Length: 358
Ligand SMILES: [Fe+2]
Image 1: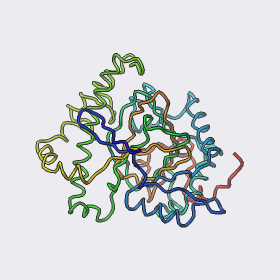
Image 2: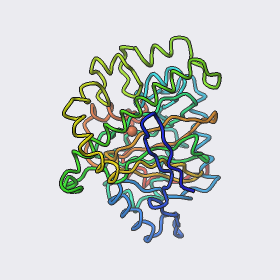
Image 3: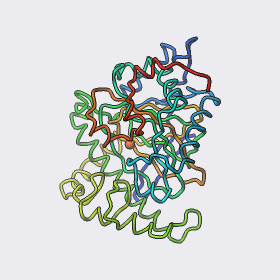
Image 4: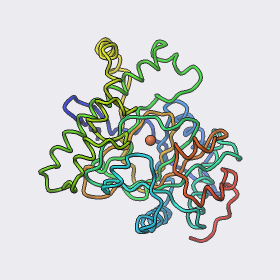
């Protein structure tokens, strides 16, 4: 069933019809994707910037990932990520953290890379670094991230370790907005300008959606606000790019969405290109079943939506560089665990990693 859901007062349309971005995973006798699957997946990655590989992991394999996430979340000394929204992390609306390079974690990451070698090796050479292994958990009351691009030159993957419902909300993507040589020639040679306008239009609606939801949470019982949370999310001077922070919006301190972005010139362009924006871009929201793996190019427009259900949404994530990476860029844009910084691993190391019984 296709649901076009609207969030915010200004009709941000999100489709849950992801069928045209899916490939049903078939494995060969070595446990790798078959050549036909690899071809389909690469075509999707190149055409749309993402591919949703259904049934890549068995239930038992996904359970291993879920157990690794639970162990990490239960550890009071876990290494919290500075990405996504630090305020959401602070108020336990999200729990994004990196996983240590233990044999079990590395073995799980290696199994994924080995299974996906045919697709990943098209983009990442063997010497390219593993940038992070993370868990991403979102709870009721989290903010909807603004539509953004991650730092470029990276392939990321999310593993659904349990079924994710539409209410829990898997990642939102804008297919076809990835960047490559000549990409601007699309949409009549106006692709980059139109993508930017579409992003602004979405983020305006997400800003209002988050603000409205936070206001209603003041008196709601399902996700009561913690002491000081409302002020921290709306009027704080602290850096956080994914909150409906009015103060930082007015001060022009949020590079994702602030008052500088809404210049009269941009407002005029949003009006002038309203039909192009409506007809040429589409937001899709994934709701992956257990064992599904989503691969995407880091420069594809996307966002982690808010979880609207009382059930936590959990993903296991990996990011691998497609090029050499400056350490500062690496540590600013991704969240490697200290054990991974001390003992860096490459894509080739993961491909060669021996599989042990879990
Ligand atoms: Fe992101």
